[in-house]
Length: 336
Image (cartoon, rainbow, N blue to C red; front, top):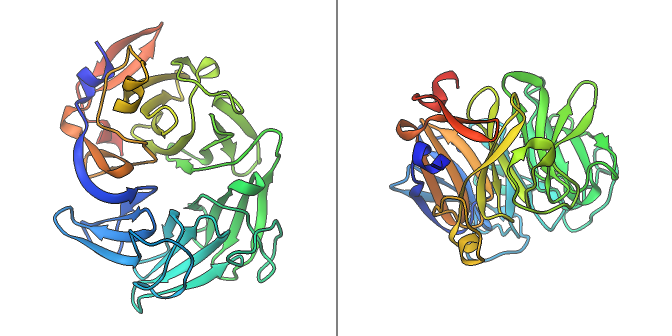
């Protein structure tokens, strides 16, 4: 029996024109989701989807009126409030402000097209950042995964001052996506080094590899220290100690338990099955990049759409002594 037998089959939830790098609840329009669709930012109630900025078909870098703005790829964003979104234009090494009231897109931090590594305000530079997240302790700060500089950066959105939060290019290579642990808000988990998941203490600045290793690709379940994964991207927390990670290199949805220190594969996409991978359940994911929990559903975003795993079919499965066992027939979000 596989995790899929317990958790339920993912089904198509939303069709898109490009890669869904990030998705979350829309603060401006209650009940909607806001998501990146390749080179654009959109909002949807599932039945109707509206363009906020950019274009799903044309890429590049153009600021100005939001619908005329062009982005290479919006790989991450943070909603500051109901009116403003800070977004990454990947490939141009800058952060942009998307004003939803005035429908404009302007440069916010860094200089688009001028990569570098320096702190400060006007002199701040980044190199191909991939994702950003809000500092839950100080809402005026956002943490930037400065991928090309192998660093974590901190940006004060009021003063626009950028500082370097963490830099050790031997231990941490190409950080990608970050999430705070809701059961221990001093801790962030992040993906990086092309094949690793890290645990980072925001206050002590202690960084350690939790799963996988630096550029050690594979698809291996088991104890976290022995597990392998390939190009992990976004993380989502579904219980106090169980997380989902979208691994587009594995073309798979993986789960890991920080309490029992175990990783397992929920399901793999058709691409991996076609390459001869056997032993795991197949599901309809395609190059998964994003993961988000909302309204009793787990959403996995990838190429051309978002799939959902409804909460009414979820059961908590935990690896112990090398085998699955059912802990509880309950929704995963009861403690969310």
